[in-house]
Image (tube, rainbow, N blue to C red; front, side):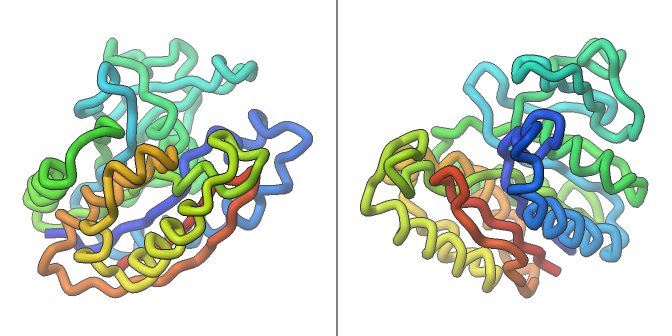
Length: 243
């Protein structure tokens, strides 16, 4: 059963070494993520699952100890899922596939928080995964243990300004506002109602992970709090805690 969830943005810029001179610009987002992770730890989960979006070839489960790297972004920073030490070989020594970017950011957040409250695993879902399959995946995760917590990594639209990755789209702000309300209210029906086609057009990579959360939280009776909302770089970033 799902007992808590944290929703965090997934840009590699959350990692200070990747952001370099712009590291302070997402300082408030990092602080909010730490606060959300504290809610997860306080829920005393038996299992924490990190959920993020990925390309089709990177999707699927990842075990505790799987490693990831930010070397593609020009910095020698490696992470491991479930270990605060750096994973120098990029796969945590497990031989597993390297974590996709969204899960690597989640692993960095957990390392930064010195997570030790419960065993870890991760699930990468394709950005194009249909809503019904996202909801079903969430229900399966919630049934994995008596007390399950989720760390859900994903961004809103990338079309909020002319300098955004997807340029300016007038539909982006209303889409992000609807997502923010749903995350603030722990409104699973509203998350499930987010339009997958529109999300794809707006480059909103968080849609699929958020709908996995919606499936996991069905009937759990959780309440929500929105801890951070902004659109730096023209991309919608949200941090929320459900418990």
